[in-house]
Length: 226
Ligand code: DC
Image 1: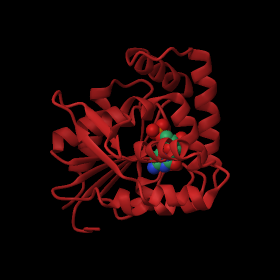
Image 2: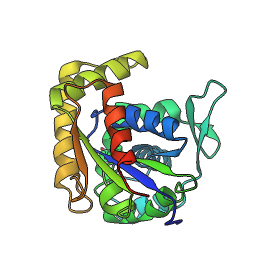
Image 3: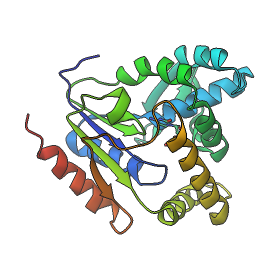
Image 4: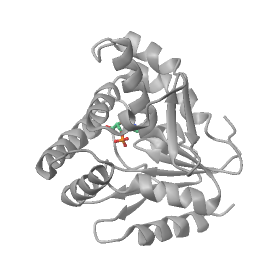
């Protein structure tokens, strides 16, 4: 870990717009991006492929500690996620994978096995880290911490649009229920529950568009003294 490399941590619940905001902020700053949700999702895909059940914490942690994963950009600049050389991008984004990721994210041994991989993204000139526990656990020394929220209704609607655009067949009511259930599980877990760091700046994006949120995050980062 390179502690001198600045980190901008963006945490919040699923559908708060973190992913889009973090990506745009990273592009604007010219910094690397860590999508830590994808790290949990890749673990879920790898575990399912290896036939490891979420009840087997030890084997699940072994899967997490030896992930042969690569995050790349294709010719169009879109992200591709490879597991042992196989493109699993679409599988990673599915609701089934998100559900399994949420269930294995409660396992302390898995969370600790994924720390090294997540911290390896901290390379110059800086890192934008998107997740649930970036500011609290993975990068507690982050230069700037943002906690992004939005109402559950707004988040379900955003997720619905996103998944439809990606060609998934989903229902809004189901997504709303899934989001509410996953929020409850993410917030209630014993290890690294979803909560703002004591020194995080909270932004409610319910009534803001993406560009407005991006600007607030950039302003928060600019306000940090070097
Ligand atoms: O943001 P996402 O939907 O891609 O994340 C998938 C799951 O991974 C989510 O339910 C909670 C878990 N997760 C986590 O526990 N800690 C993180 N830093 C990121 C994601």
